[in-house]
Length: 429
Image 1 (spheres, helix red, strand yellow):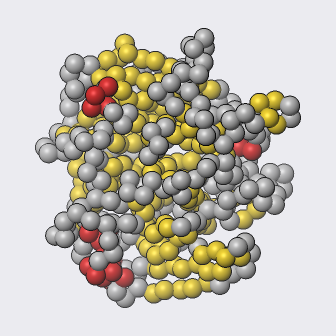
Image 2 (tube, rainbow, N blue to C red):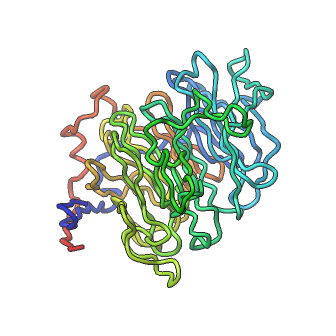
């Protein structure tokens, strides 16, 4: 999407044909199966030998040994005091940037009452086992319904913890929580977990960064929630920082018409309003009560797609990563997919615009198993990309690495687009 002022002057779509039109430069390799309801996978910085896999229902985090493909028989941690019905469960995991020295990691879960808790734990003297007794609550908040809990967390380049929250559930955000700055729901939060601004409150063990956009802001004679970094989200499912540029990409699941991908440039001052519940993707929410014109400060997604089962369609977006791993042809492309349709796509995101939208579904065919329900994408410490399938399989993107490390646009990469049609649409806002 290319913008000049407030005018939308162009969208570039590059539509992949059949799988036979692709150079054989990347595919999927199944690296694990038999995982119970896997929902996410990640690894600590510098740990290139392991992948930590989150199981939604069991409350376990398991360790996949990347060299052997074996899963440790003893889980890294088992958390039992959670609720798991509907979209509840163990939903997210992130390791502290200094995990190698402090052993801290953070989980996002719904507790036995169905409310969100962000907890910190610490690894034990055994690097494959966490210390369950090290639990500390960082922050918690009520969830009015069983769905739209979000769950992603990530440390930004600034060292702060970002938390993606859904709007609290039901449909069309009946409490308009995503637009309410007094609510933490429907927001991206930003916390300083190295400090504590609330020493007398055992349920708030964090600090508010001095440059958070709503610090000290009053609305309706009441201080808003200063933890908020951005708002207007429905159910962000999954977000990621580009490990090279620091840009933040947020995939947000739609209500019934559009699925979307949002972009926040590195160096943003925060405060973006992504439009929900008034907006759904690039359009007004079709609901007669919830829908409306763009709110003040609205930021459109860089890409949205219609619901359905056609080309570039689906029913529940799953955000991924800008690939920075060793496969030459994949570098610099943001990979994402759809939980329902099983579609796998990529685009390039730069300067708040999206180009080179590409259907990868026919290309990324696994050597074994099937990509059915893309619950998440994952990255290991080397930037390799994984697809976490909710039916228990994990796939790794593999391909030609002959050019070694780097992130430029090579001739080999451009070979991906041979025989591919380009369509330009000129629009006016």
